[in-house]
Length: 385
Image 1 (spheres, rainbow, N blue to C red):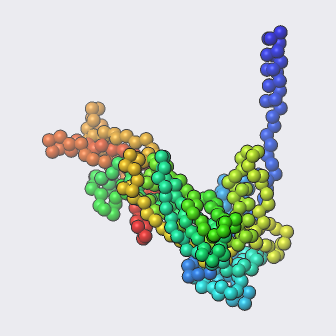
Image 2: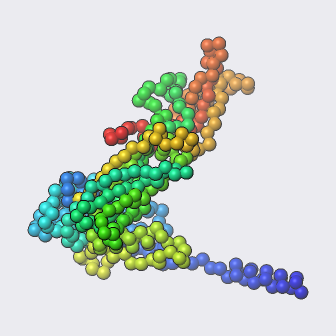
Image 3: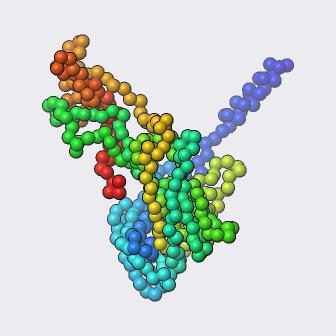
């Protein structure tokens, strides 16, 4: 009887598996291409940067399609017009606008295809200065945070983003470079041991003090960095930008955050429409994604050195690295140096010589990912460093 039961269960499970059919929802192959508008009209002396992209199919290999050759202007309710210049890849920029805070402004876009888009007129929203950016040392890394407040209790809704920059090293210093004929000592300009890398925030960071008596943001979390991260190897910097939001703008960003970051289980927030303040004039039924606020932007940068962190912390190099022995004449008589280190375009790098009685027998070497930091960064030091 037990055998019959097991056989029945087996047939049932096979039926379930065999009855599965692939499901490809229409949205995966949909050809709809909606305009996505990112950016803030900066009312102060800093640049206004607007990014225009088109949505792409989920099945496409590219994740964005920049809107090129558009005419982008900032317009005031009093008739003022400010032209933004295209700088490439769907990015449009204007120098400091220094807008009159007593007026309202909106964004006007005309694409090369003749489609016209307008954002709603928005009041200028001044952003209070950032009080401080700090960090808390935890067991397995650091938690970065921001403090801010508005003494006039007028802000209430906040958004932040940030840009990280850090200094890191290759696993081994490649002391030599080839000219195709011989190995030469690298000059300072040719060094590939010390590099800089950077990364922009990808999460939507929001804060609200609406339910508080005072408009004070205290230790608002920004990001965490693990103690084994290369970001903390030598010196790390974070530039935090703060934006004051209207209630409508805050609701837009909050809904967008729920739809993009907090989905995955039945207990998470369910997808919902994310209405922005940008509309297609030529085709009113066409959705447009984005919310263009108008206001000043505050920013603050801090640096964190390895000497400020626990000395027991050690970064984990992202690749497995070993040193090889390459000789001018190995046991088989082959010239490893000529074969692997001398040719132009080689991916093997000489680290240090192997010598005996003042004679160079060969070199300790390693591959590019362990000796060339420019694979993951740049040797050019940032101007603020």
